[in-house]
Image (cartoon, rainbow, N blue to C red; front, side, top):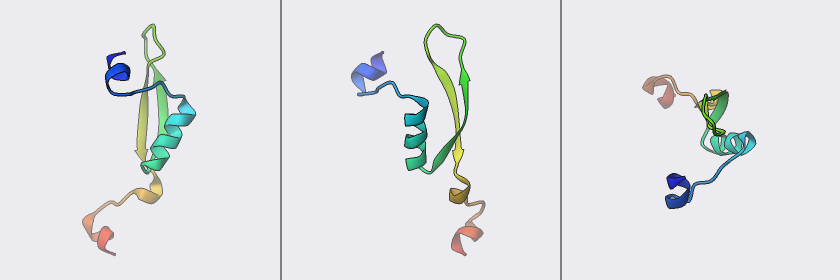
Length: 61
């Protein structure tokens, strides 16, 4: 609650998170529910395959 009140945070749906991550060049790979009484979950994201650079040498090519 403090984050939402002080940092203008908000509750988002999975679809909204997917859009947010896509804008940052990431993809949502997994959502794991937590054992809490709220709707909290752990979201796993990864760089989109077209965004991955594996070494400095490849970046210069």
